[in-house]
Length: 314
Image (cartoon, rainbow, N blue to C red):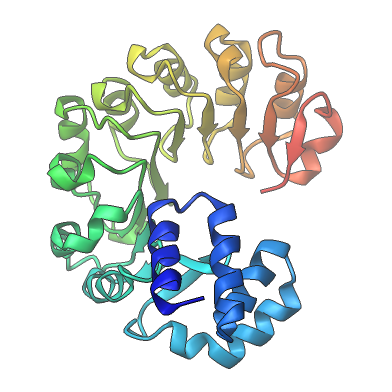
């Protein structure tokens, strides 16, 4: 096959990143040309893990060409689709990969003293292909949710990783901004995960946020009381939510969820906290509203009393 045809197939892969049939044709073309990347893509599609490791060890450095050392890569079905690193390095990486890899997910790991580093990332032309954005840091920047280039995102997650000793009582600007934001038409997944502490007013702000009207998956570390659960399940803006991830929910909150009519629409529920005891598990098992085909993620030691659901481990 000619080089022009191989290039055309690559453009097709980039244009249709979810189509594995196109990747298979491209892999065959590369194999015919003697390019080891073709074998790698074929092995990834077939799940031949030992071949993947062998090929990545031998050729991974060349496939990472142009990517700063600070950036980690995540392969899916033979292509680099996810990147993790600081904003400045990700700007370089997505520009280098734009013409050869279908990068769609970024995990940003900026330092807390670089609150606006993400801005250059959103404004680089190569950001146009990104559909999932996760920001790890001290604060979730409300300005990001107002940025025009955020409108194409399918998934947004903010994760705070602050030790309790570093936390103060200053109101987080995200709480005031959330209810005022305009809808993001493509947003299907949204999360705010906080480690070690809770943000006053965050649950109420999420429940009052019209911009979340399209969201089907919601992850929220700040929800842990019965009132939090009721606010989420009764919010008209969250009526499309079918998957809830509440990693910090207590038994009292679990009981409230298990008894609430709004929980009947849930298809997936993640309760990964060690605060869920046997009492909480019994409330789930005897719930009159939760569907039997619910996919439930809960610590394994609680599995024995709730086998009516489709159980998964954290």
